[in-house]
Amino acid sequence: QQSANILLGKKEDTTHPYPDVELDPDSQHIPLNPVLSHLRPPPPNLDHAKEHSATILVSVVSFRDGMRCGYTIFTALQRARYPDRVRVAVVDQAVDEEGDLRCLQAYCSMARELLGSGKEQKAKGKQRSNIDFSGNNSNADDCPRSDQIIIDERDAHIFSRGPLVARHHLQLLVKDDHEFCLGIDGHSIFTNDWDLFLIKDWRNTENEMAVVTTYIHHANEYTVAASGDNTPHADTPHLCDIKVGGHDLPRNEGATNVHNATRPILMSKWGAGFAFGKCHSERRVPIDPHGYWVFDGEEFSRAALLFMAGYDMYSPSLYGHAVYHNYTGNPVTLTWQNRPNKDARKKADEETEMGANRIKLHIGQPFDGKVSTRDFLRFDALVGNIPVARSLDQFLNFTGVDYNGERNGLNLAHRCHQLHWIPYEHPEVVEAVVPGWKHDDGSGASEDEVAAASFRDSSASTISTGDLTECMYFQGTCDELTTLTNSMCTGESLVFVLMGNYVFLILLFIVTRRRK
Image (tube, rainbow, N blue to C red; front, top):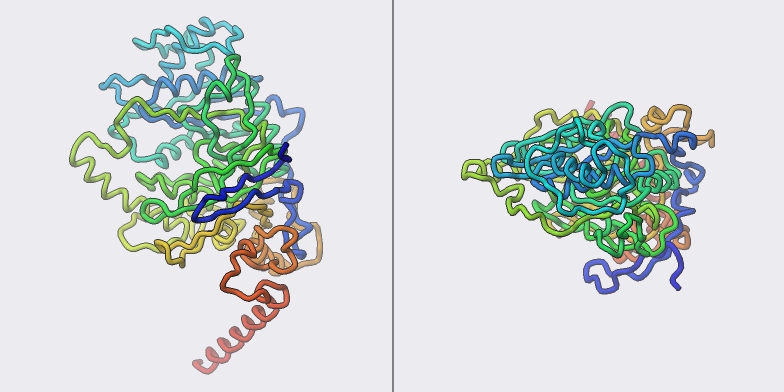
């Protein structure tokens, strides 16, 4: 019997092979740097009395996939323990003249057939069978719970320019009274009482700024019972590796797994198919709609901007994995970039490079070529309007990416071991989100000392407790010290590094004075 919280290794992985790793979620919020070890993220700001009434917005992107989108909406509303608190927002991209089924049309047909018009029957386990999807079945007058659904219907031939555009328009549907937001794909399946499990799992992160996210498992008879009950898989997906994607953008590797995860596990990646947290993350960190046609790089840039704004990503626990993904292919063969005419395809090709470069601007990745800076400041954290609690350098250290590498300009280090929470360089940004919470408890360290230690701690965030003495200030694991001597990652060597910095500043001051 394998113990809990074991990150299953990829021993045959030729790029980053690693063995099974024992994780300790009880220590993941303890910064490794002794100067910062007393700091913690803000606790969940949710009264237990409101846990069953807090509004959940389920945000769905659908591309010419009305049948499965309708079933996603149906299971979300029907299988929630408290369905009155659930809202569903959908950006539905379809082509009406080609006979595409719309999401709301499919949902209403299912709801009438399986629930009865206006009735609250228990149909949690009922499936689609012999349902008439023809005609306009989205009449709200007799469509159960249609008042809880917000639909933004778009013509796929005209509107669709990649997932970032659609997700941006989804964010516009987030309202002030939405407490929690769940972003999923339009071919997902919910299990019974999913709303309770997701909120409980989020609370168990012990972090108000938590986003629980991953590549969720495939839905089949082994994961979703005929009754709609969840049959939890022993291993939950965990994102920890990066690879070089299209246009040399960083993209997530496929998920590895944590065996018997008892609590959400801290990680540095974000997955587009499942992301659950407080809606203030959607309001505070807007998605840039000018990243046209970007797939690779979308998730990395989202993780970067969330991290810099003060958020932390976690993979779900065993029981927090209450939503599944239908990985079977979309029956519609038209893809995002397969435009209906030559001129549209040419425009898409031109926009693709500019969209990739736009993302590189957000994540500080060097590039050559054209880019649009239209409305850029609104969506950027480096020079723009998104308040920054942590720096981009902290994120790159934390996630294991270096833009000065030899492989397509990227140097990648895996992060498939215990990570530790990174304190904020600018805690006032998060303090404004969580009224009454303070980052520092009066330890006596100055703001500059805390900021400097926060950066060093991001470099040491992946070191296990046993390696703490020797590798306190080094990025990654001690195995990555192949070109360095052991003394270079000791606290003693840090003194020499700091002394070197001071000498450099003194020389710079002397040169400046002489020029004057």
